[in-house]
Length: 545
Image (cartoon, rainbow, N blue to C red; front, top):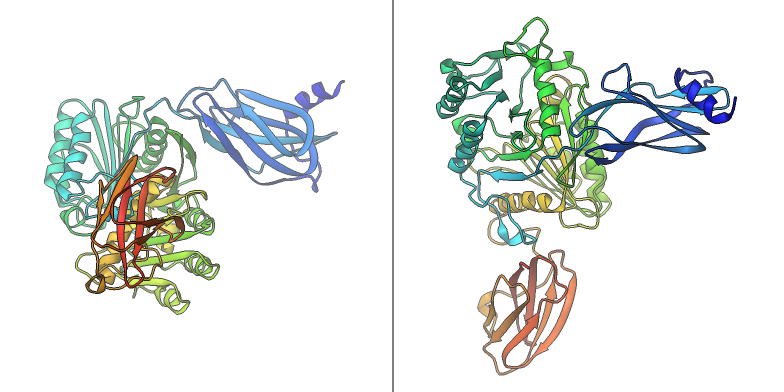
C-alpha cells in the first residue's frame, strides 16, 4: 500500500494510537471566503495532515488529506456554500499512528451579503479625534429608536429579539404590526426585571432565567435573506432610560452568516426553531453549549462573536487586551474581573497609553482602586446618567497594529462570564476603532473638563492670552492642500504633529498667505504648532481626502 493510500485509509478512523503524539491547542480558521476557508493546526511530531468535515457532527462530507509531513499543518477547504456552518475535525498521521483534535469545531464561510456596518451612540462624540470618517453623526436617542423601528418595519419574513428589558411601547407596536402582516416574530426576555411594554405583545414571548440574567440586547431580522439579514446589538436595553439618558452604543450589521449564528443562539434559548417556544427544551445560562462559529469575514473585516456563558468570553476579551501594542481605552459600567484588571495594568506598565472610564467603582470586587494605585489613568464617571457601555478599544491610535473594538452586552464581571446570557463582538477594524475613540474622547473630556484630554499631543503651549499673533487656516477640513495666513511681520516656525505628538513636517513661513500641500498626510486630525520665538500657538487641522 503506497503512503498516500495509507493516509486516506487511516484518515477514516482518526483515532489516538500514541500518547506522546498530540495536536496542540485549538486549530486556526483563516482565509475565510464565501466558498471555503483554511484550517491550521500544530502537532508535536512531524506528520501528514487530514481534516474531516461535514454539515453535522457526523462529518459526512469526508476529508481532505495532505501527505506532506510537517508539524505546522494547513488544509484548505473549498467548494463550500456561502454563509454556511461546517463541522471540522483536524487529524494527523505519522506512520501507523494517527491523532485527532480533542473535539469537533464549527466554522462558517463568508456570506454574499453587503457587510454594511453602522454604529450609533446616543450621546455626543468628539470629532476632533476623527481620522477622517465618523459613525452616524445623528447620535440622538430619537435617531436610534427610529433606526430600530425602521429595521422592524422593513422585515419581511422573520424577527427574533432577545432583550433584557423593554418599557418602550413604540417598539412593541412596531413588532405587533410586523406580526400582523405575517412576519414571524419571536421574543425572549428576562423574567426577573420589568418588561412593562410586553404586556401589549401580540407575538409569543418566552421569559427565561429565574435565577440569573438573560442580559442580551439583540435582534435579528430576515435571517434567510442574503442582503436583508441584519443583526442589531450593543449595550442598549430597550428602555426609555437606556435609550434617552444612559450612555450606550448600538451596532447594526448586515451579514447573513453572523445573523445565522445569532439565530442559532436564539433557538437554543427558545427551545426550538419554530414559531412557538418549547420551555422544556429551552437552554439558558450555564445550560447552554458552545454551538456557534466564532470567526467571520464581514465585508472584508475580521469579526469574532461569542455568547456567554458557554464560549469563554472573558478569555477572548483578555486575549484582545493583551494584544494592545500602543494604546487601550475602556468604558464600562463595571469592572470586577481580576484577570481583565491585571491585563489593563500590565499594558500600562509596559508603556502603552491606557485610559479607563468606569461607572460603578464600588461594586464588590471592583478593580478601580487597583487600577488607580498602579498609576492607570482611570476615571470614575460622576456626571449625570450612567456609562452603560461595555466596550474596549485596542490600538485605535496604532493603526499598524491590529485595531479592534470589544462591544456587546457583556459586563466585565464574573456573573457575565459564568451565568448570564450575553453576546460579545470583537471587531478588527481601524475605522470602527476610531469611531469608538470619538465617543470615548467626548466622555473623557467631559470628566476632565476643558481641553485636558489624553488625545492632545504632548506639545507645550502658552495660553492664548499671551500669544501676540493670529493665524487663519483655510480650508479646514482640507483635502489636497491648505493655506496659512498670519498677522505678524516676523516669520513663524510651523511644526505639524499627528495625534500621538509625533513630528511630521516643519516649515519657516514669511509674512503673507502660504499654501501647503497635504502631500502624504493621511486622513485624520493634525496639530499645527506656530512659534515666533516669543510665544506659541496650537491649531487643529482635519485632513479628509
